[in-house]
Image (cartoon, rainbow, N blue to C red; front, side, top):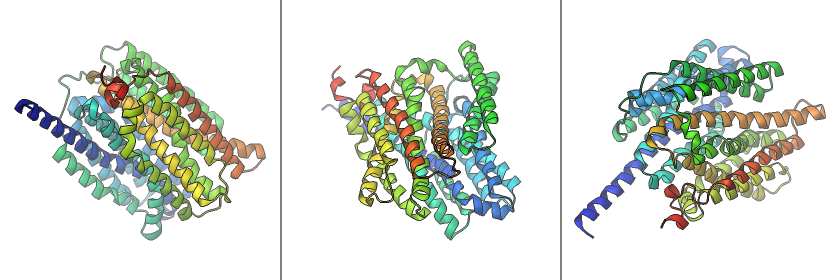
Length: 481
């Protein structure tokens, strides 16, 4: 091997190490962000008592966070290009951390809602801009591992969050559910300053104000409708009205983006089959099914089995262990089988494991429950990593910012859509029985409905070409081509 070849190989190794470090830094911040979204719900009754309000009034804290985040997500890509992704990412962590501090110090519901809104604004910029940083620092051959690193927070935090939140609320106080973000945020900002290089576009153009208003309003109304439908409150007409308005504004935003000279969001990424299928069509349906599972499982164990929150949390930890255990073999499996086979076959396994959860009963042997949850966790982790990686396999540098923003918008939609579909199935089944609260049979129907969505979406992935994403996965059949 010549000196030049040795030097080039050394640069590749160093570059690969840098990409992993950057991805890990971004993942730390993502974990803080997603953990906060799942940990808060466990402390709402205690917060209500502290603020001298009814527990139902506390739901506004979750709603305002979600709506503020929806409003600012469309702006994230342009801000990253205009001011530099590193600077915007650092600012988003800082805003989120400061808002977390004041959420924990809030003495009234009004104060809490104001700081929660600011926290949502910081959160809106964190995910898409963080993903842009990873995409710009990782070569295609490193993309699977980099995406796997930034995907694990989305897999683990929803499972760990309720258990950790319940523990903190029981043995400390609800304030620490927010104050715990302070050290994580400080460490995250320090890591960004130390390891993340600055990159910015030469000329991002002027801000597309009309596009921002239309897309932000459309997404906010759509997510508000899904949130309201999941809670099954307020009647049907408010949901329909907001949903209709959100669809109209989203269509107007789409037409504007297609006609504008310098649109806020470049929709050309949807012409790329791998991006479109993994984010918009089959990808959204698949994420909807998988995202419904962390919502349904705690309810199944507590309402259907009559277990305590701690006992239910023990089962969820097995689910988390499955998520975590898949990381080591994700890259080899994608290299051996390719994206089409993994997304289709693994998606089918994930969907069938969801259906199987609906047939669990209090008499089911714990070993079988643990094995099923572990399998569901394994398949969930594999599917999310494959989806998130394939989405950017064929995206060009000029499309990265918009593609990351669009992906974040659709993922946020699928998260709420999964909860909304699961809640609707539970409530409809209960209503048909003339009951107010769901029982074991209602959960069975909910899991079957959600699993059926997953089955259909997994079959759709078989329409991908065999070589889809091969440059990223290194699929063995196409390495020599």
